[in-house]
Length: 247
Image (cartoon, rainbow, N blue to C red; front, side, top):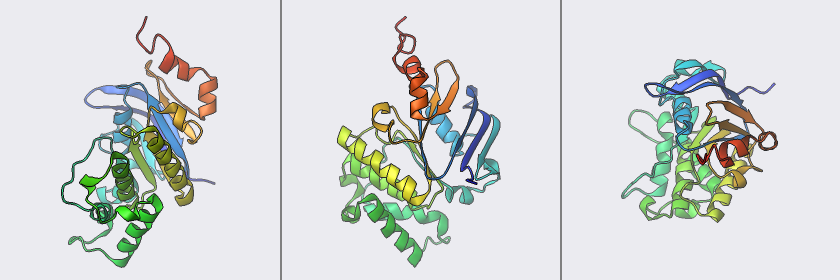
């Protein structure tokens, strides 16, 4: 029996006030889940709640069968890794130095790296295909290369769940396709779950295992890309005059 990596049970999310209610869904290992919805609907808020950057307002949120609030910060960093959409500005830091920061949850208070840390960094450099970038400055890289480095840093944490907020935002079409294919390989080969918010429906539809859809009528839907498309929900929330505010 496969253990759910993530379980959402009728949760309410928000900042000071509730933004979206009654969200229920699960995620299993080795899968990719795409989180979709119009801008401002609450996608980033949901990702930050799952990452424990925001508190759950109501309901239950479990990671590996354990309530998320029962994890210490250190334990949490070993289970969930997050790459947010904001560009980061790092001057005078090499690519490999940035990736080593992903090993911080496993080092001692002096930040000393052991052989296993070096091995894992080399492993993710090869996995992401950026070995040739390791000695370059992060600031010298293209947007696509920077995104790969940030994902490599997250994978260096050896997470069970990788959360990505709009990972394809600053990329051109070929780079988007390359990244999505890479994420699929990572999920399957490493048996981890990936949850990513995205607007690129046409690019991701055949690559993801399920879609979480946050409707502008405050209803939450989840299912396979095929089932959601055949249900008409994509049209309702993305292409109808109501969703485009044309009526």
